[in-house]
Length: 440
Image (cartoon, rainbow, N blue to C red; front, side, top):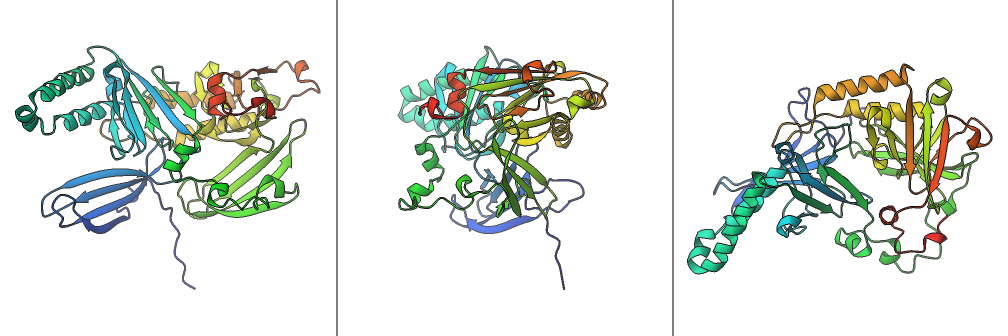
């Protein structure tokens, strides 16, 4: 029986893979209407995700075009980035934008709407340069036929040029309803001092723009029976299995799902996926009972082996931070998982080791030596040579840290604080348009 090795669909570009699988398609040139060639490459961008690179060239007229499209599913939430451009290093930051990314510069009241440009990997300076090139197009004709309009555009081009020379600090705002947008952090893995990221829940209209429809919208009559695999159909001792795609290489894989009860906490859904193509393994945990009325913050002092072995349930809305290491990890970076305090630190360490420098128009800004020193500090914590405090902040209230006493208040190494969510946190959880008191 002949077998063929199954390879991941999206692979890293490495020296061990000198001939990546490039697909060539004969396609129409939109410039001269002759036949040209489109080359498709499925690859991965470090620190980001799988993408499809498309390159078109026409031998007849020399026209060329390059595009980038996300190679996976849309993110669960949209994303907004706000970057304060104050230094030259900010102009060289790598930016990955999709077709659905809108760009705003409030100081100039300038906006590039979503879907007006194709997705690309560029830099902050590249965004300004592309805008200037678009505005400069046909300026000579415009000066002859519409001199007043041409003069206004020339004045605006001077203001854009001032942004490139950083005569004054300015702000770059990106919004992407698909969640497929990224801005490089030059001080990674530390928190970016001049760039803020905010996830938001899409509304129904934005979902429809992406082609996302609920089952009720597709079939208004499909309401009588609960869907197979929903929480209502799940039994505690039953393991459900369904076909999905690997989150790493997008190859077909099996996902096992089970509803279980965590003592002193609540019911959760545990999902595990193993990919036969690339060997990727992932475990996810989802709450089985909705959002809590208040957020929760755990402060766990890790100073011994007993602290490392505490059970920890981290939801995908829970942010992780270690103040002593200046480490901050967003909720969706590690995802939801049921592990231990040691497992959280090891998961962060593995992500840092697997990350590579982002490549593109400009050289990587992050210092690899700083990253190496940072991983050594985490290793010292895992070896018990350094005591730290792990802070878990979950606005949804769906995270849990095991206490070593019957009453968590008597546990000296664990501090639990429940708090009222802010408007922004409710917005991120999609609760501002509903009665929050009904969620529990």
